[in-house]
Image (cartoon, rainbow, N blue to C red; front, side, top):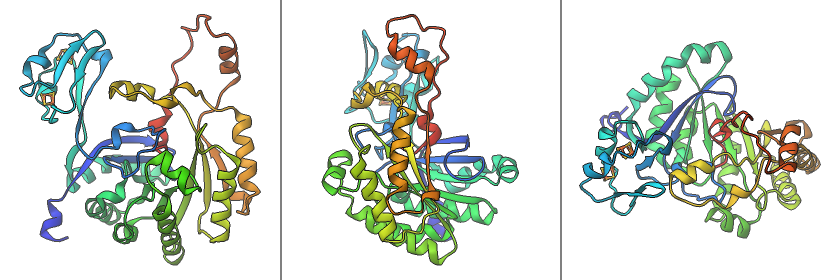
Length: 350
Ligand code: SF4
Ligand code: SF4
């Protein structure tokens, strides 16, 4: 490693342990901050910006106003809905976080060195060894921090750890050239086949994404590595017959060297994240998908020309209990168990 690379820092959003959705076995996922796409349904909105951001955690707040007094940038105020962050003024210095007596504020996105991150994730080595698991670098978009991610992956491979990246495909070919030699598995998201729709949904055309998929597929094939393609099934967006058929046709016609095509069911359990960021989320109105919906798209995928055996579906679906709840809106359901936040568990729908 060159001297420059020793001190390289990455903008890391969080480390999530015990993941079983982002590759084989039990995994520790490292979420990088910053993405070139801005998907309208994004399940990790806090990962889109490359900048560190302050987050207020309403349930912890005791309204003492110490943070407001502490901030010398005039970025905080108390409203009837709680602490309001003026993001134009906030420089994410973290002074208010230090002073808050009840851990109701946190900085999302910490500049982190390779060695400290490796040391942290290697604490989970025994889980990796017992489950044939490893480490997945997710985001945000890890390939947009290719220098840091490459050094991180190198260290993990030196330590004998199975490595994966979870990419939206929107980065330069050069960034993948750097990263791929140190990756065992690539999880590659293909969201929408139609370029115009892709631009509407994500803010960017899918041209570069498909070019990168072709390049990565060829690399994986020639270097004895593994590729899984993943497609989020999003109501009013990607969940159309034409889209699933189109993606399947592309995979088949271009002999994409993937061992799985995973259809990932939408969920709406990330709404609180948008609330914490003070943003409205247009997909709040949609509930979990019905099993029949996923069966429908799985069947279309299996008939699209890909090997039907590689098509799988994943994610939480509406249960019979939830059908009843939907049909009895207004009844007291306060004894229902709280839903699990699968958004972070999958780490995919970004
Ligand atoms: S992070 Fe710094 S600038 Fe932002 S609100 Fe807190 S004290 Fe003010
Ligand atoms: S210092 Fe913490 S607990 Fe007090 S008002 Fe600010 S966020 Fe809430």
